[in-house]
Image (cartoon, rainbow, N blue to C red; front, top):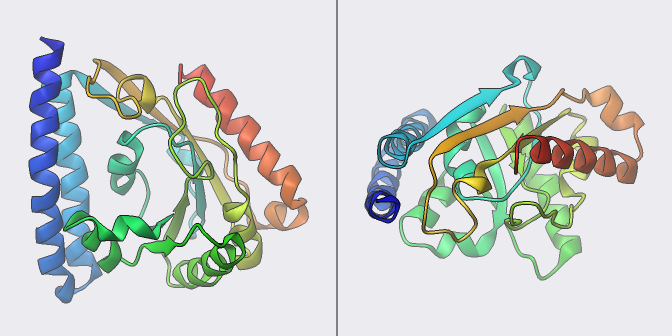
Length: 238
């Protein structure tokens, strides 16, 4: 039964994602808000199906930590679930992603027209330069910036190599950092076909204001973020 329910969900996901991507692309000429409507509706629809077909519910904690101004969100990455959920978790934002994702028909094109920052991984120096330049512009335009510092999804119980791009951007742009931990990989595992019933908890940790970001050494702040996010992820079972 678990296999059948997961298969139904996966089929719906594969059908609906290109459809919503097309609707987003068609609405983009009418402004960002029109396109963002479809991004949020896609996220909401996928999680409704996830609950109905797979018995997975979502809990969001720590929203009291949200700042009034745009910031950099540093998030744990262990599942596709957090990428799907992000339009429902934070205000309008841009991602820092590998540029190759733009080549995915419809979905990748939708990411591109939303202004997602696509970096080339071959040159770390150029990638950091682009993150600072494009990320700062997005923040000044009142968009939040979401970064997965591990770069790729880490299996449950493991920690990827945290990269400093998000910290560097926050310090250069003089904005704060909002850490995000979760246990999504336990129910929607990395490259996992089977979706297991339960509750995914997204927990925002205390906001780090711009003054603290600026006053803390880069490596120390990155280590602090890693320690907090990983400890909370383990606490949630992830």
